[in-house]
Length: 166
Image 1 (cartoon, rainbow, N blue to C red):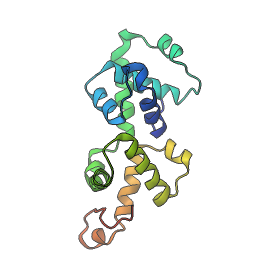
Image 2 (cartoon, rainbow, N blue to C red; image 1 turned 135 degrees about the vertical axis):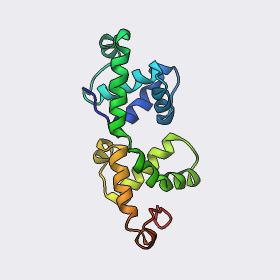
Image 3 (cartoon, rainbow, N blue to C red; image 1 turned 90 degrees about the vertical axis):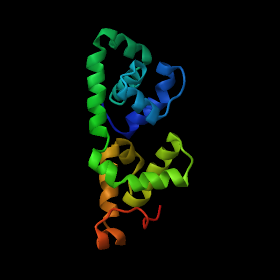
């Protein structure tokens, strides 16, 4: 059984060098998963399993992993990501937050993680563990609900991040 939360995605980044030979960002891994890249699927599967079994070694993983079961592993990873990522409607409605992040900080996944962590601590009072145990989907829902409290939404019923103190 795999766990799909922020901790898993950070494990994937941290361990991507094992499978790729170089460190990859979450966005790069995600893009590669969508293309059916085996290294990306292995990275995500290892991260999802590591999150459930604290001391899963890479040797144990490769003893478990069978190349001829790639399609099964691929489906497991896709299913996990579908439950981790926000649905399309949420993605559209909170895109302004992501736009603000891109303009305020340099591009890079570590910046995105730092911003998201800070945002969740400041606006939602999340503990470190709550953040790691959350998913992008749940944080997106919280962000959307917070944005509905802004004056722009109250007057025009448009979700806008422009009045949020980030």
